[in-house]
Length: 142
Image 1 (cartoon, rainbow, N blue to C red):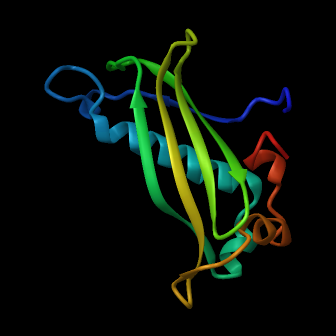
Image 2 (cartoon, one colour; image 1 turned 90 degrees about the horizontal axis):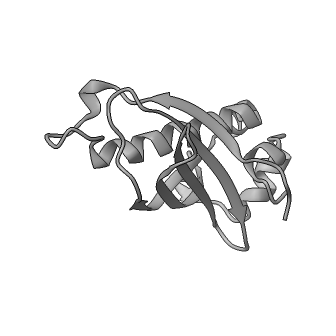
């Protein structure tokens, strides 16, 4: 393991994102995770990946809600990738209030799609590496 912190995106909860109970709508938590996933790929340098006609695609998402968020709360949304064998990889996001309170954890399974063939490619980590993405930005285990 490493002492490096995972990538973080800061987001402020907006009034229109609340549900009738006055806290952040459940679907918006997923949106926050998606924002962080898109930003971590951009920070890692995904331009060459797009030129190669490859793109990460979400296959599964699971969220555990820990503490509610309300309008005006500011959170950091982390994003950390892990890789194994085969065609999928995983990204974990934690939505954390600035006081350190864990609000939610999101675990996603993703693949890397060939946009021409519309099929997942094997070894997404290898494709990221060959496209010049900074794997240390994507994953604290690199």
